[in-house]
Image (cartoon, rainbow, N blue to C red; front, side, top):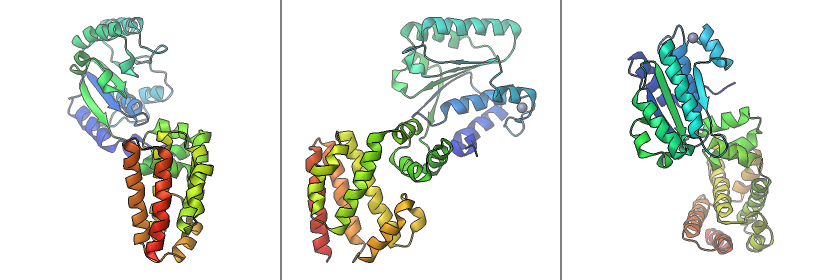
Length: 333
Ligand SMILES: [Zn+2]
């Protein structure tokens, strides 16, 4: 099942649906937000709505000739522009403008979608500026960007800026499942990042897989109060934690395990991220004296993240967490 725009960006969809119904749709929009938040899908959805021959309730009918042509990407009046290599060049914008002038003659509706708009060269951006200054009544342009600050202020000021919120976790999980990613992986990835593109990269990243495996083993040693948890940092964990960024991910993953453990200890199994470890968590909770041991440990990990932020060495932070954990356990028995 495809995740519809209704689930992906419900508030924005509603906004554009209403704006369309009230005939107040602007001619130039700047969509900004993280990768994978549905900017392009939203622009295409609006294009479909604009071209639809029988829109109802501010939504495309999905069955008219134009809706079907949109689905098959055969609609010549929708023009999508991507960077040619590292940049969007002035020639590409000129071409777009030529199309635009032609459309004025033909008086047909045109929709332009410019991806990675921050990659426009200065001359391309200047060329686009004049384009934005003389929009025809039936011309719509959507600039998409992940880096709003890199768009010229003169361009920004001519567009209505729409911020795309990161995706909710359950929506992310559903999208990752559609990509053929295993459920157990999808749940973790959706917890680690709300950037869909990053999640897909991580899914294929061997280093991330290794990091997950080693963090899981480390977590088990920590919970068992095994003094080996300290040595494990240098002997095993650092093989997967190559830099500060990995350090943050490792601590996030560790936090998820403790959070899962806390949920299981309160019989809230349905909320856990790592369903595949449910039985291990359950047996862990049986030897647990009190839940505060878990929350103390989570506090220690959060403190570790703060230390990483102020550039304390990764190994020192991880070993510090191991020592604290062993002391925490002693205190709770
Ligand atoms: Zn239609």
